[in-house]
Length: 256
Image (cartoon, rainbow, N blue to C red; front, side, top):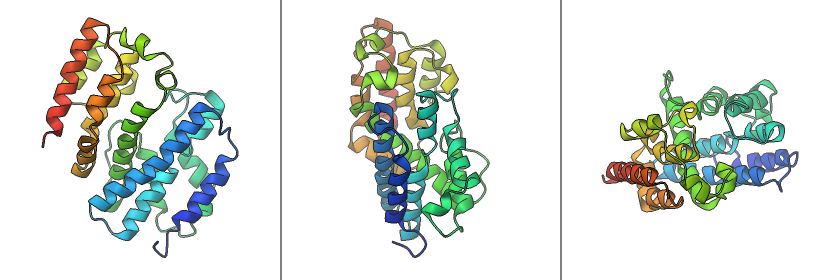
């Protein structure tokens, strides 16, 4: 632990914050688990990158706080959909406008960096950050978030993730714009997702927004892409054909 960052204290404060929410709710439990897993992902990526002890701990702190706005979104709307709330902006509001950040850490030297990393972690594209250390951590939380989302897509209920069964999802088409975007090697723009399979493709196409080779190495080591693709039984013939193309393209990217 560095002199300026006490992660165990911050974790205790986070646990106290969670007591204001229904821990038995499936979506709440999913996000609690996700938060701690993103912390682990941040630590692993940062260590593999050879970052300083302080930067490893700073990455873990950002990971702990990155989705704090999700819990209010779920309480108010019972939804993860971006149209219901900008959860990143809500997190910034809770931490910096309401001042809760001081409960997590006394030192304010990292406030601007943490604020930017949390505010930008779910942006479609990461642009306009000039400070090198801030950009490093903004990229790192985005990678850590996407890395754990691979685990989420394998472990959590399809019904919770897609609001329908895997069989129902597999009968749906993949929209032309989503397929074309994936084939061009780009992440999927959220408003373009119309079907359950559009959402599933977007979870695989996250890989096109990964920043660090270390993150890609972990994705390859855990064989995440074939496992995610196989979780939905695509009985729609056109969907099955498109999924095979998308999976093959991503696996070529990972063959480095």
